[in-house]
View 1 (cartoon, rainbow, N blue to C red):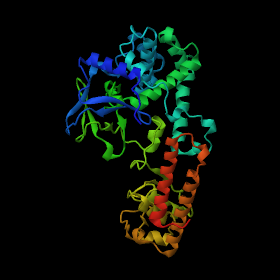
View 2 (spheres, rainbow, N blue to C red):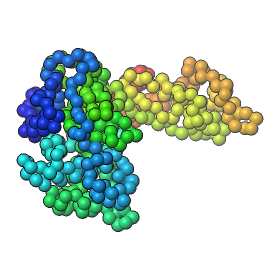
View 3 (cartoon, rainbow, N blue to C red):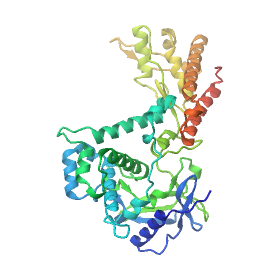
View 4 (cartoon, rainbow, N blue to C red):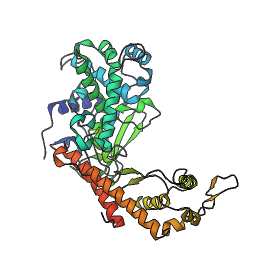
Length: 428
């Protein structure tokens, strides 16, 4: 449902036009909806390859040029490893701009980025803000486990004293403009986490080896995301004079402008952005098969195939996806995992004269077509047990799921397991 564009977004547009010296946004316009929030749409029909809008370099907020030299030098001296992290360095830069924007009146801000800073969301849907104590069975799922890890790392970076005795939080309280810096460390910690979430969900990082290209891009960060190729109609290119956004294909007037932020699984989307897509082709479940057991020689032979990796198909770790593109390799690996010495002889796995396992003459055909009825029975039983354990993991009570995005995440994981079960016609 269409919503009213907030005043802060309208002020952002005025600021953008004034700083770029243009009268209007040309081929794009601001939009607002209840479900997707702020976004951009095509104001008119746009042909493939045509420029939609351009963000000049002076409007890009980077970690390399905005912090005053004395603050940058002091933080680099006290926390060299942290300030080498582009995301953390840009987080500190954004905190500095926020402090400046709030240190003066709306009409006379000290930060030239004040309209941009004020238009940023006041809260984040990122999972790093989840209450991990009440997640229950969700806590073990990949996105939530990763969020807990990131959250703990942020708290550790902010709170724990460095070798010189001062924590990053204490240093920021001392160095940032005091008038708008929260008086207590708990409030500053909340602001620090918010700024990190803004950077991780909005920064462009097109050239990882060039710190100057890890930037916040006003207006560019209003483009919404999709991992589904059919939905994407915008791309961008980095140029010496800024960032140019152009039509990846013909775009009809009024159509939402959608880009692909990066290769994001649902876990990535939920972790950093707070949303999830159905049918995301990049969503996967990483499964790890058990280590080989048994007689020492037999284990050595299996490890030579499954861990040392003469062929990519055989491994202990696999990715399960909705299209089951790696599913057959799970079966092949389980056949090897449950193989006898006689079975491995069919694959031409031997010992050389030095007593080491030799797979130079490896023949995969027997494992592809089956090593025998007994082996297949064990392999399929192991697959069924794997599917049962995954189903149990994703059988989360509805009342435990905190948001619609988290519900989609759990449902999509369960759908991958269902596809795996159907692919092999497993009887659970």
